[in-house]
Image (cartoon, rainbow, N blue to C red):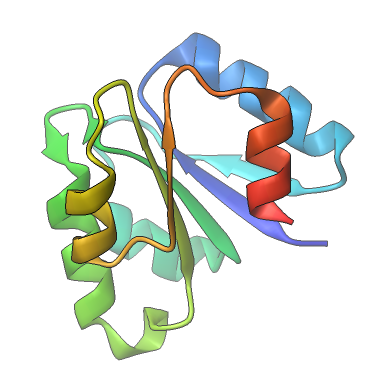
Length: 113
């Protein structure tokens, strides 16, 4: 079972994602807004990081760049998401995939599997 770590600051979205992903058989953990994401990724050891481009006052692009510099996290799959079309910027920074909000649950599950 793959573990998904959520770095999303919308509490409603976190709740919905947890329910959906658990129903699909994923193990799910969520970070508190303001967490040091690269450090928490090291502690949680997820298979997939679901990262909001704007995680609290942090830049998801800066977070992914920091993760990609860490050799221990080189194989981590990162799905970035935003309400703005930032796909090119996120992919250039090292994301494996980008989802534009609002996205359908089916699109998310297909992407994670």
